[in-house]
Image (cartoon, rainbow, N blue to C red; front, side, top):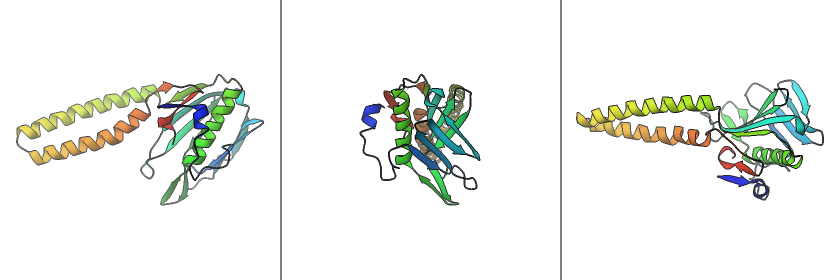
Length: 205
């Protein structure tokens, strides 16, 4: 459910929130360096992979917010920010600490994304705001899910018909787990546009 930007600014930040949302730092990989993003009077300043830059806010052309879980962290979110020249930077709501630890930074990530939208809205930005994954990938995933569902339904019917009730119970359990995990991913990442006034809650921590 979308939440108005002014309402999000009133939400009490989580314990891991970083300041006023004007800076966000995270480490996307275990071996690479940290990436730093700041909102200043000059615009969006960033340092990533040995590169750096400053994008005036009126040069930001698009923002895509999505839900991107991984094996080590099921609650991970992603923001892709693109400028008018087609250059892109990516932010994640998690950071690597050790080989066995990928930590969530929900408060800091959320605060930064909300503040970025607030500043873009204040200057009358015409940036294209997108939630979810690429429509082509989404449709392809739906087709694969439909094929798998059909195959599993056929196996379930056969198991019941032949009296293999243990196999039938296994298939039902597997289908429930599949629907819970993959279904949630697909629901959050449904391709759509949004506005500065209503940010999509399902692709934000």
